[in-house]
Length: 304
Image (cartoon, rainbow, N blue to C red; front, side, top):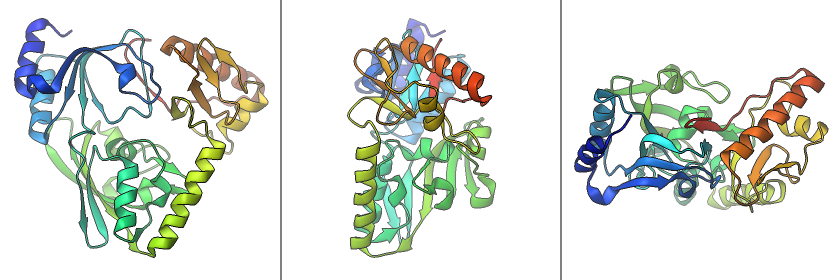
């Protein structure tokens, strides 16, 4: 539980210009859904981030590290704690020969653009993933045959004791949508991405091709949290959902996209409750018809 005095002290730590009380989370997620966060902090530095985290732990206050909210469904009740946003400030990208040193808040699209400018190939797959580096590393994000495990060689994290630890490639233990960083409940500060020298025209051609594929096959014209479910082993969530008859199916303002059934979209004023009920019906029918349990890829935050 966070009280008024806690709010006052946290504002003193983070700076009044970087804090918002009762901030609607629908303004900070790509789903455009979510009730108010009791306190929303835009962290200006790693030092401020650590101080806020230590304060929250000492006072038993819930907190959540936010990138650009691209894989997140926030409860309609909001979040009775502290949201710490990192993507606006902790987002520098530095080139070191054929490597990029990237802070956790950098958008993947910005990292891909930096790689292209430098003539470095290997990150094209991530150019259209609407997330930040920190979240992408934690969940080993991927698309079109590429994933973070193929390019990340080192990650600097705050461990569960808020100590800075550097994890090397063999310590990251990447798997499908998981990593050792997630297992240790670490907070990514930065990562080193190893790429190869390439041809800028060829890099641009690949990125352009993937952009067209996304535009034609994914419902980018509507708010969503990306792929709603994880890919079940040996199958595809979108295929199972379509075969179960859910293409275009709606609950309130939430709808299964008829463009790609792997996406639940916000057709307008959808609530988190709409999305949860829709995904519940999908999981129930797919399990009944195929004996395949679907697992949400989207993270849930708050009370449901």
